[in-house]
Length: 367
Image (cartoon, rainbow, N blue to C red; front, side, top):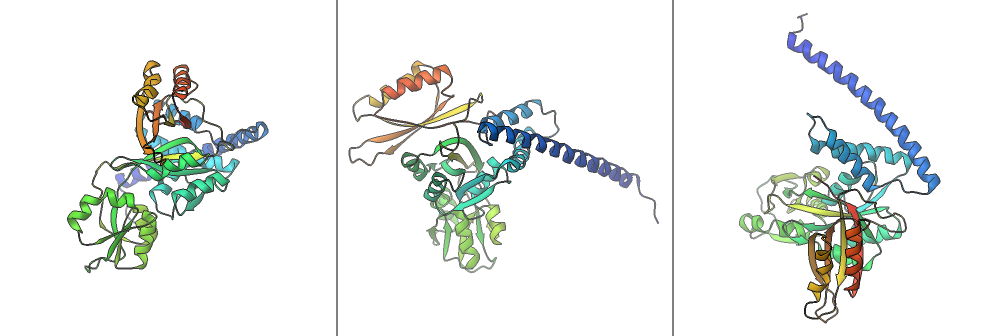
């Protein structure tokens, strides 16, 4: 029997060290899980909630700050979200609603934010996500609110006006749309199925490469992938996850018109079941406002922000559907209402508005 080479012997030694470290990591993770169970018991006795987004944000920020490498800092957050998700699941199952079926970007956003140790509640529409979360069938909902190339997701914004849900977190995804199909055969497709937002985000590519093919809007990209898996004459625009879920081939990768296409998702819940997050040090407050239809009203509405030194990071308008050319204005401002200048600005802002609603205050990624 040949003697092992020096390289093979060195590799085996490294593997032994890695195996030993893995066992030590597992021991430490179980030690952490036991502490999490003790925390859970204390929370139950005092009646507080298991999930605190500001606390998890602070944990991750602290670890990023002391990361010595070579592990990339961007890798710290997803690793620790999974650890915290698994520990949280020992306290209580977390039910999360999102636009389904399996394989949607909404599902990916939900798992990226909460980790995979959750009870998944796929819904057929954004309206159902809001209904399910409002009714208590899910603890949290995940809905897209803005895309970097197509702008706001209007249905999500409208639903904030008619439901009691508020925002306790946000996450964003780099969105890469692929053209998928059941077969690699050359026969032409009758139609391409996708969510209207995805069709819009791929408009240029489709017009150049498949101008004659029908573009068929469906409830979600994953639903389009499901339909394409049942009919070789259909194509779909969806993610890698959807391609794997439904056994489809990627005919053309990354066909979105904007190479840096991103979608921002809001994490919503009912205020009776979850308190607003406390300050984390890097927070956003989302508002919806309206003012009387008169000259200078919008300028006057925003003046308290300038006067108190509060920055605005987003400003959108939506028709109020009153027939009077009135609008609702959606704002994101930097900071938390517990900060003196933010709280003072919000109080003054409320005085200038015919309608004023805080949609949520939540930690945002500081890096």
